[in-house]
Image 1 (cartoon, rainbow, N blue to C red):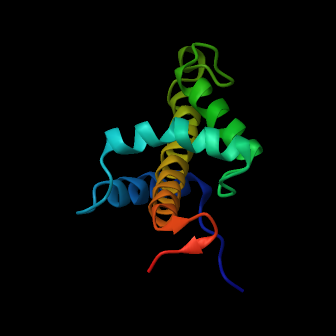
Image 2 (image 1 turned 135 degrees about the horizontal axis):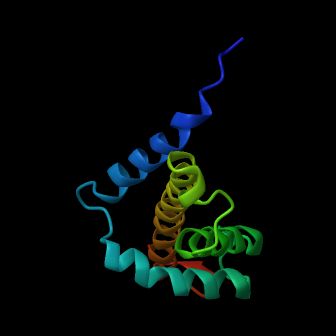
Image 3 (image 1 turned 180 degrees about the vertical axis):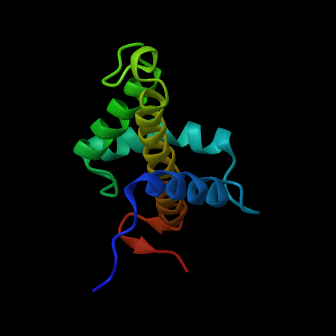
Length: 122
């Protein structure tokens, strides 16, 4: 039976993988990724792109709001390192999910450029 990974390192691994993916040679720039987010949201909500569900988009928005919000489930002033750790875990998930989602969306957009109303241009 495989041993489960320790939860405390999972967030760090996700963040590390996201940074490696985002900074790989030939990978889309941060500006390209950020400009793709509104298009991805519109395409997802209109039903054109099925790579992101509305629930996943809501989770991304909630994670972003949680990280920037002064209100915290585990406040840093009271719990010190533990209070920072919850923000770090949410931020790691958010970064990893955003890199993965924008990669998938940009690939979908690129593949769509080669498609003409129901026909694939070769």
